[in-house]
Length: 90
Image (cartoon, rainbow, N blue to C red; front, side, top):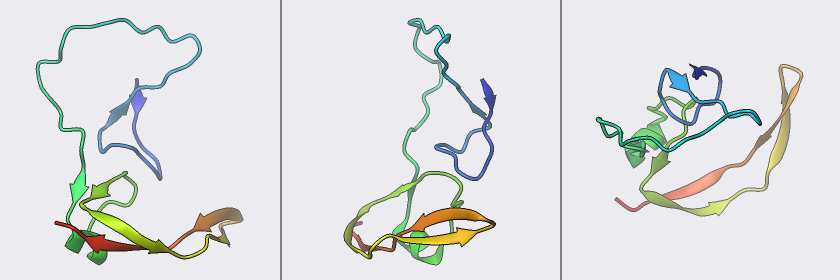
């Protein structure tokens, strides 16, 4: 277990599990506290960019179209960008 930090995180939690070839996994008893695995944002927050973009998220809607992927250089690193056009289904 290590600290969960960086530019892109799957969940907003201070720790993460790292799995290696030598990692051993075993069956355990149920957790005493249930954690909601979903991190939905409202469509309004998505449009207003009122969310932590470092953490993966989902919204109740659908992608209705996309633009072609484009490549930019930022801080001497190549990044791929694509615009998604979404529709609110909530």
